[in-house]
Amino acid sequence: MRNLNFHHLHYFWVVAKEGHLTRAAQQLHVSQSALSSQIRQLQEQLGRDLFVREGRALRLTEFGQVVLKYAESIFNLGNELLSLTESGELQRLQQLRIGSVATLSRNFQENFLRPVIGEAEVKLLMRSASLEELLELLSIHKLDLILSNRAVSADSSTSWRCQQIAEQSVCIVGPPGDAAKAFRFPDDLVNAKLLLPGPSSDIRSQFDVLLSQLGIEIDPFAEVDDMAMLRLLARDSGGLAVVPEVVVQDELESGRLETYWVLDSIVERFYAITAKRHFELVPLKTLLEKSQAGFQPLSSG
Image 1 (cartoon, one colour):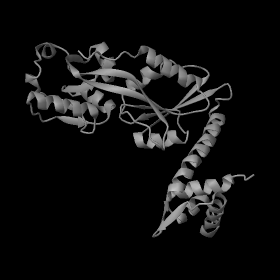
Image 2 (spheres, one colour; image 1 turned 90 degrees about the vertical axis):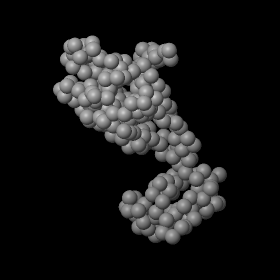
Image 3 (cartoon, rainbow, N blue to C red; image 1 turned 180 degrees about the vertical axis):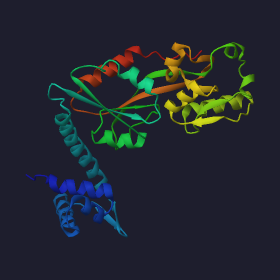
Image 4 (spheres, helix red, strand yellow; image 1 turned 120 degrees about the horizontal axis):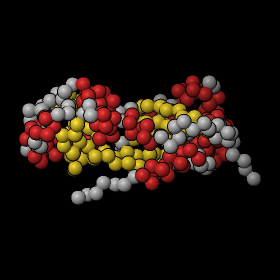
């Protein structure tokens, strides 16, 4: 009965991810010749070639791609085990590691996390980055959850679970007073001091489509990717901002801003992205269950 050498498999995994023997050897702190020998022994044990050389790079064979999928599962499971022991999930104090897309509304994040904020037995660790960076961390179990306003889909190399957890209406907000009551949509957009999400934003794309349908061209006063900055500008610039209501919820409640118009055809959707796990995190389950219980999609009418 053959026994798989996981040491050799780990070396193969690193080489496959790097695509280059020299870089993999540097990462593993071994000589290139020793690494080549380990890979060769694994190929002999499995009876098939794992790589073909293309210049200085290595390309996986079809069989190598199959082996890589198994290696990903094996070592990701090992990372999950380590993360559980490091996070305290198997102890009394539980860590919940959450990544959020850098442009995501801070108000939304706080609303979502409220069920566990202040819980004595839950320690929150928050990280903000691009969605691509966060997905890399999730894949190796360095994160438990990603909050995003972009959906992702699983493929043969990933096991994401992406569920919509909220849907927010988008509105035009500005200084309170007579101007809000006299505002005419869409006529007054042309001469307004408009503050818009940046061109890469899904909200901006939806707003641009709406303007095109209305036959309106505008020259924005400001285009801002960061929702926290857009919130500040909406509050302090005297302009009109196109934002999800949740971004300026405090200002609307206090009367510092007023809703000029609700853009019924434009919404921002929020998603919770998790990876398949063998051990269920209780705080994470609590958050997702409460978010789903409170999530009511907007009507299409």
